[in-house]
Length: 113
Image (cartoon, rainbow, N blue to C red):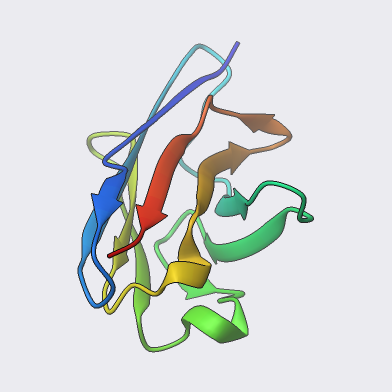
């Protein structure tokens, strides 16, 4: 049993910032495994945004977010984060965290003036 709850999304102007949070819990959750952030916009395929290992090493950044997004985790709190800066309209999507095939309900990010 795994529960993932994302939060932190919202409406932001281009150039703005948001910090997404994913709270993980459940008897089958373990901090030793990699977690991922995905996003999906209406009518588009799901994209892997970033991954982070159990020890906190980030990887797999989507090319279009490199230098703007940072993934991190706090294993004491069972949380992962996605810090997003210099947001662009093309970042508009529902963002999900993922763990071993599980995913949360997502949080909506809308970048618009």
